[in-house]
Image (cartoon, rainbow, N blue to C red):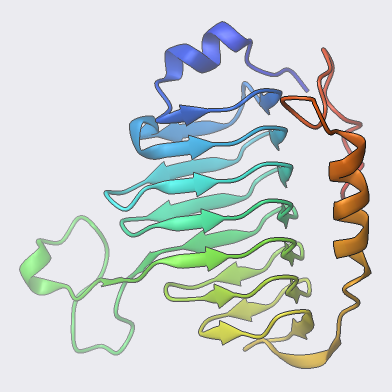
Length: 206
């Protein structure tokens, strides 16, 4: 996988660009001026980041795997240590499916009723491959969404959800908080957690 150089990343015009950021040359970025990216972030092939007025806020130590999309007019926020597996779709805007309104962006707005709501993934959330996150979803710290799930609404911290719609399956361990503290201590005095000329192994987080 080929990644954009630092100079290419700067030329893209991100609102904020941290250190140690790897974005595939095959990823697509729209309205970069409304996208903020922290430190130690990797975005893989064929991902689409399309920010609306609400913007996209990506924290630090985050992986967004291949073919995933973050799209919509409202804010999409991924806090530190989030992991988005391949083919995940996160929407902060969605058409009205009721039949009371017409749909798709090629129809004038007065005939549609597009829903716009912010989407929040707090620290240490992980979303499994093929899942869809709908407008208004709020994933609290440590939430895990299983593969091929449909998530909307609010999800409680350190619980695992799965299915369509996503339902509670079981609790999730919070041991990762201890590991976060250990990791942070090990990086004390460094500006970023990982400084390297090469990206992490492709399947490291899958």
